[in-house]
Length: 392
Image (cartoon, rainbow, N blue to C red; front, side):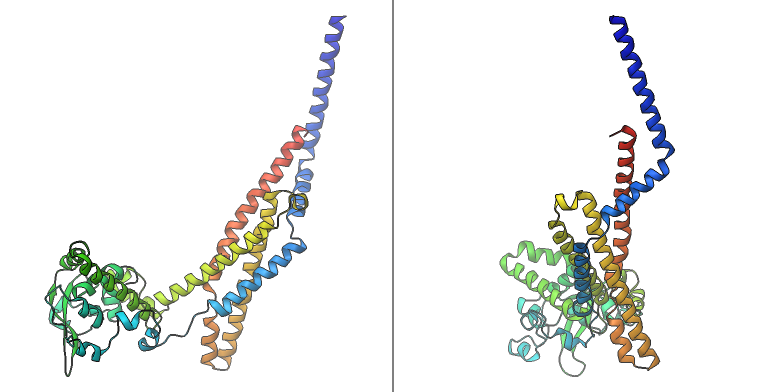
């Protein structure tokens, strides 16, 4: 009796194994159609709903508002125009000849490397001078530097290195050229007056005297360095959006002429900042939309959280593509009309609306979101196919 029961169980188990083998074989034989059905199910679960489309229009509208009202390329002004309204300009970089004369600092009369705090504040930044370089022959920092002139020949105008060398130049009343050669700056009144390069200085001393003022001269020294740092920031801010702007950081240290040539083709600090602003605000809008869309997730209605994220990414990518495509088309139409009617002003205004930063963000989203969606789709399809093979 016991032997018969065991025998029956064995045969039943074998029968189950055979049936399971038939089932797996059937799944394998129809794998192509099964995988296709699973893929269709994925597309069905990740297609945009009415709510998603509302988010799509909302995100596209935000991007378009940003493109045309917040991050377009602005008209460049002269130096005097762009410095107006720069915070702290009147206090730390006044360029007021009468104020200098009234304070007894109509000219620089300091000892080498040691201007007073009043001189630092009342006089222009020393690296703004363009006079006196010829006497130094091959060391002349202003020679052969291209269209940007002293803005590529002096490190005080470098958007990054200027915070170090420009500040040190202001503290020590010196000028450090692109070739790392430094010079003492003095001034004179009368015809041909103003700042000029007087004598060669040591770049190492320019930096060491600045450090000494900060570390060893008490509160007075810290005020000098702090005022110089503020003055440097004010000067960079007043130059960056002027017609000649500032060079791309660091390039001028090894080839100032190249930095000037790049600026002639529009690759200067003003345009870089504008493109950066475009990209930053485009990313900020994408992040905001993703957060709000994510907050509306409801598991009972929307199902899988990961599949819902696919819909979120589709909303963001599609909105970016629509906004960028419409921007390119609008700019192209405006520029074409301007060319056909020889309207230079229309061409200029049209090109100023080109959303380069937004285009870069769109390209990044197309690549990164496509990669994410592909990965989720693979997990969904293979995961469900594995479940079918396992009989779950």
